[in-house]
Image (cartoon, rainbow, N blue to C red; front, side, top):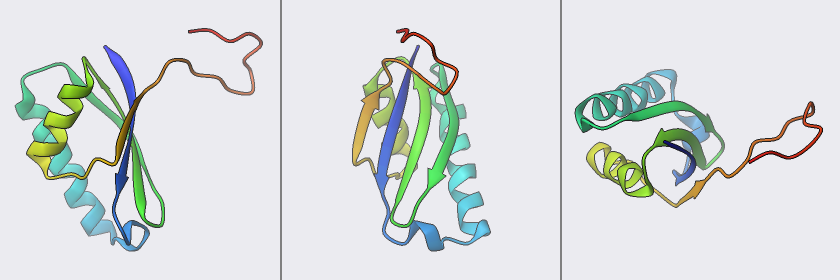
Length: 93
């Protein structure tokens, strides 16, 4: 399984109500349950006009299938190759 960062262009995303965000979350979870493939939505970050999502899936194609079935926009998908943080002393893949 691979980890992906998905950029979703959604003008006004930062102004969505808690109820609207909950509806998006529920729709995503429903699609994940219906995919019939290994898939995990980790979390999403809502900014002014975009939502950045972290998902784990077998491929970019499965990410796109999730988006299509859920009606979610996809601006870009990038596979995570490494993770670093302040405690990282040497880069690892």
